[in-house]
Image (cartoon, rainbow, N blue to C red; front, side, top):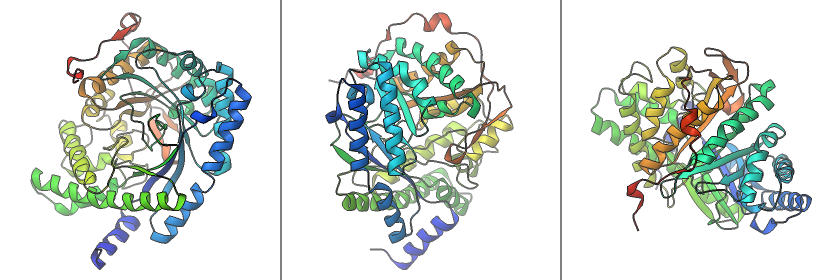
Amino acid sequence: MLNTNDILETIHMIEDENLDIRTITMGISLLDCASDDADRFADKIYDKITRKAEKLVETGEEIEKTYGIPIVNKRVSVTPIAIAGGALTADGFVKAAKALDRAAETVGINFIGGFSALVHKGFTVGDRGLLAAIPQALAETGKVCSSVNVASTKAGINMDAVAMMGDIIKETAFLTKDADSIGCAKFVVFTNVPEDNPFMAGAFHGVGEPDTVINVGVSGPGVVSSAIKRAGDCDFSTLADIIKKTAFKITRMGQLVAYEASKRLDMPFGIVDLSLAPTPAIGDSVAHILERMGLERCGAHGTTAALALLNDAVKKGGVMASSHVGGLSGAFIPVSEDQGMIDAVTCGSLSLEKLEAMTAVCSVGLDMIAIPGDTPADVICGIIADEISIGVVNTKTTAVRVIPAYGKKPGDMVSFGGLLGYAPVMKINEMSPAAFIARGGRIPAPIHSLKN
């Protein structure tokens, strides 16, 4: 039963601490749209998305008005297009991407995810066609997001797929060079990808999901930061307890919105993703949470330990607040979307190597990181291989979303606008892993994957 203090506290979180629902994401299966005719497939996916998601934005806005809770984004995720459009050529997949983009524009959402392939053990004909289409598709659409799962703890790492990612990212960066290579901000490489993630750019609608589903992603770094500030100089056990209680309150709001959206749209409720998702707004930073714990600057020694405490406490508090938790569910550390991370990189406190260490204890991985535009493709592949191996060995989701900003060098700035923010171009180690990447084949799954 909510009392007056609970209501006032929530109002304060919304008005003063950047609390919001980051996204309501409708998952839509496109398996019944399959066709070997590219034009027919494009028409069918456009028709289904615009029919199923017709009232998504309107419903989100109604819930905002009813409860006074900001819902920042309304989005759609679809069945991986490499599966649904498995008979298409690369040109056909580009047509499908443009149909997705038109559908997103029609229903008024900001992003649509699912221009995706799952290649952790190898490639189908459809997978190869979609991979070949990614650079052009991302360059010629505005709202389409793409992802590729190249590894899993059960399968190991498909290094042939990893070897392709560097060239795809470089070509995408070149084709979108006039907009600071923004195409790469809509492309992410995964291991252990979840099928119910509501966050972009990695969202897609898994094949084990129902025909349609509602997933919600919450936020609230500012709320957690303020709670830590109020706690003062307490010990770690007390600090963890404060974060847990705060995460419970944040996630409870997400559960309410998810339930309401599910009921009003007459679709199943899927999951609440309880991730702490930052924005460039002042006071809405995961890095600032870590600094509130006592670090002079994010990236200082102790940062990984602080992030591990935060991530664990958020999960423990959030999981008690929702009937179904899923997606990524942890603390995000995207550089361009977090003002504290941007500041830490700019002053030299935070390096790519330290970010990689931090990803071992949090979601999602090396995210929204701008690197020099002349970075060789094999170096990008090495960055991906390192990050993906952390996820495989630790049985967790990790990912890489790097932007080789065309024509930019370390210290330059790139700007993407909106929630994607801006970022300093980071210095990287350019020693070549080319011979290592060229070995090809699959890195075997770790021994602890044998759990049957």
